[in-house]
Structure formats: structure tokens, C-alpha cells
Length: 138
Image (cartoon, rainbow, N blue to C red; front, side):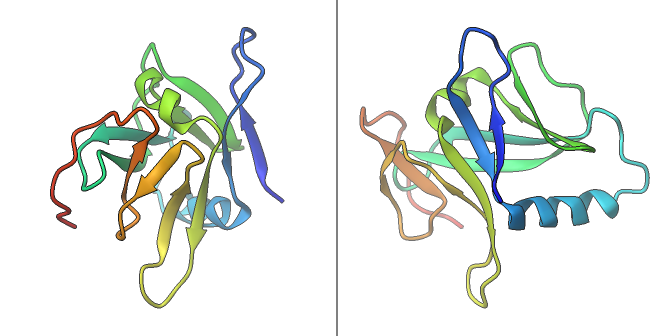
């Protein structure tokens, strides 16, 4: 089962992002490891200019309240996903997944907006060619 996390803004019925069951399981494990999870605990997902293809992904647990321009999505009972407006335009329809592999396992983003990705899987380019490509330094 994939948890559907649609934008809650009434002006948009489009799906923003989904999170796979394996990613939810991993996130729940991370949350359980927190001494005292805060009510506003969120998974911040964002893109930034850079990476060998133009944009790179970033994500991490964020204990701060969401920012004014964030899209806030309920992922689990104890976890919300925060995506800023700039990143949302490049992440619409994407899926956060967790891959458990001997080589290269971890969280990954399957992004339908990416027309080209680099071999490391951490950077991508959109159809409009936005973002400044830089050398891959993982």
C-alpha cells in the first residue's frame, strides 16, 4: 500500500507526493528512536540547485514548526512531510521510497519530473533545464 499524500489546499486537487510502505516503516523506526517526538516533527523534503544534473534532493527530520510557505502533508500519526513552495513545483507526483540493497540502499525519490538523472541518483534535471549542474561530490 502506498500512502497518498495529496496537497490539502482547496485550490489544488493534484497529488503532490506519495510515500511507500517501506519508507513509512523506516521513518517510523527513526521517529521511535527519538527521545520525545515533538508534535510538529516533520520530514523536510526539498530540492536545491546543484548536483551533476542540475538539481539535487535533500531530506531530513525537522523538529521546527513548518514555515509559512510549506505544504504540510500528514504521512503518519506522528509525522508530517514539509515541502517548501519552490521545491513543490519540481516534486509534484514524486514518490519517496526506501530501498534496502547491499550497495546504495537508503531513501530515494522517484520523480516523474526528472528527464535526466545522474548515475548516483541524487541529482536530476527537469524538461526546462533549470538548475546549475555541478560536479558530483557524494
